[in-house]
Length: 315
Ligand code: CDT
Image 1: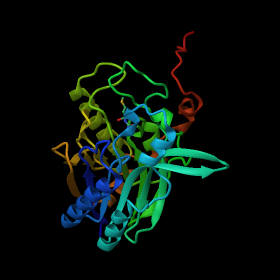
Image 2: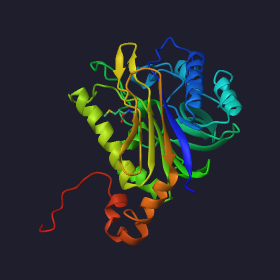
Image 3: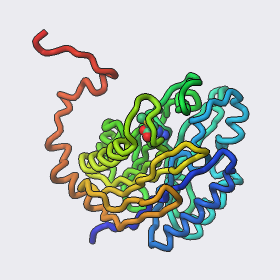
């Protein structure tokens, strides 16, 4: 009998600067209940799901940033109700948050996601590797994208976990633009990749039509799921946060590359799908039988070189 799991993506509408983590948790609990009523047993929530997308703001007082946006423990008093309700309902989930730790005598901050089992235990942690944006203040820009200021590059690598009768991996937002991240998960047998995101409708760095940004979001998801023979569940935080818009289009993509479910709004919304986990395993035995067809002896540059250098073979 094939392995079936009903999975949901719980999209969040806007969280403004004035919204507290308690406010966010209340909404997350409602979304969790809705996913449960739809029959889902595993839910993917967005990146930095308890707060507004704060890297859009230049804030010189790090103590204030820590107090308003970073978690020193998870669950915390404010976020505990989500964990309690998930355990009561017997549901697993993925959620993103800003993590602050003390390690080796210094404070470290990461953009983090965790996998929580139906019994409430945290079974896996991932710290975002691909941090977009910049670290300096850009006073002339319409908004900032200061992930390089507020976070360190994740130090836990790309891992998978045996979880709820599947092999699950985690990524966060900008990671979805880098095929290497997915491939490292797929090489460990990932059958499902969970990913939360916050993606501004406008590109900070150069003009780009909003529709094109959504187009890229969709084709990346479809390509990454298919080429790595994995289910992919992406949940966004979206809508206009204090006047700064981010797009929705949360989605569940099958290992065939087909979009199985997609959100319609830019507000709180749950989408769900019956996922046949063996579809991922089957494709890894056939079309994407890595052991039979990959040629890593020709892929060396992928790990040796970071930026492109032009060295034509005839020079
Ligand atoms: N949160 C996050 O990583 N957002 C980025 C914005 C990049 S703008 C080109 C994203 O990749 O969606």
